[in-house]
Length: 254
Image (cartoon, rainbow, N blue to C red):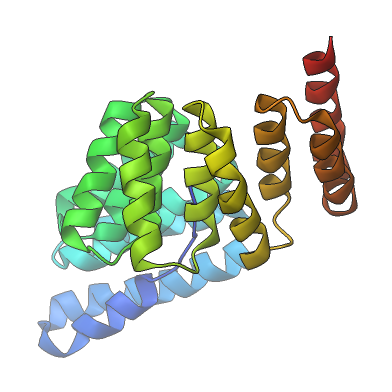
């Protein structure tokens, strides 16, 4: 199953600039320091010094308390870094703290959902994705993540509904076609999944997971030869994933 989409954005500097004109002298000094620390964090991030970057963002959150959105943006960036490091609990804590300062951030809600999903806290993750969509109905990433989470909760009908609406609104979004194909295959409707797998691959032919999922659907249908054909396509893109798929196919043939 394809994992939730992640985007690690550094929006803190933009947030800082937006607040400067209306600030008092004391607050303005704090914001200038926050701007400086944002640059420090970004350089540290580029150099792979993730701990230093996180500390800088955390410091911004402390010194910019009088500008909640600036502090929230810094915590959001810290959470994104924690996600990239695989520290999902720390990421969830950072996103939650960010939302306490800026409850209207669809990005923070979505990212909170992704961190909770990684922690297998699916009901809470779903709630976060729903909040993100309520804040921004055009947030494609959050809508897709809702479908993924319904799938993981075993609520395949709801997942199917989310994917179909997403495809209706964004027919060129390959992950939605792949997600719907996987859901249909899990529902015992593998034959319906085939054209959706094909569409996903036509939209994004270099995504190895699409070939993997297509092969699994063929296995569900008992079409081992066609599954092997997908494995061959996959081998050129991701040999390790193709090797794993080969083991899945071998187990299926026993």
